[in-house]
Picture 1 (cartoon, rainbow, N blue to C red):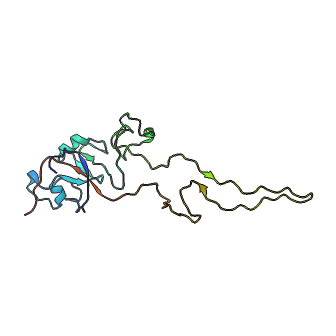
Picture 2: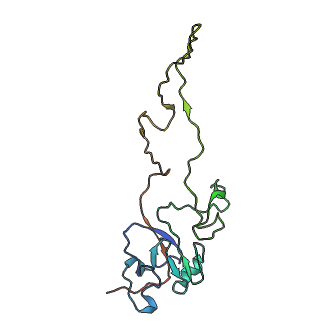
Picture 3: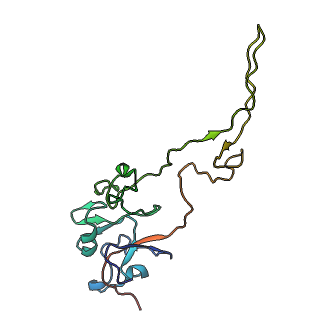
Length: 199
């Protein structure tokens, strides 16, 4: 874990202890002679939770991030990746067709389509085809009102479900569109050294 550059982010499959100290500013260990109680932070990694850090106490990470994720003067923020999927920057490839709809992180500056920019969820434009009606309306007798045969609930042809009772075979959420996923902790390297740990 010590070979990763400062500012590198990786997925961590384990649980994390609380930040040490709660604000993680300043860091324990190193030149202070204090001990780090969070084992992960002892190795120079912390959770990407948007916390504010001191530019003086975290100079290496500040050089890597600057104020990209917010902050000013003597403090800067790290990225907050909690609940997000990560996506590589388009960098002119044209794969992200909605790159112009990206926004800066809260309080940060990333020129909208750069590292750190955020994109809201969306569903691609699409169409549904429907089964044709089995019968047409019959002509009305003189002096009577024309009527249309009552409709019958039918499935779309090639639709996303095989049941007329929602949600059928499709898992439905009123909040988001998403692929199958698994939780991890995204952590960021904040120093090139290793901090002291209690023995």
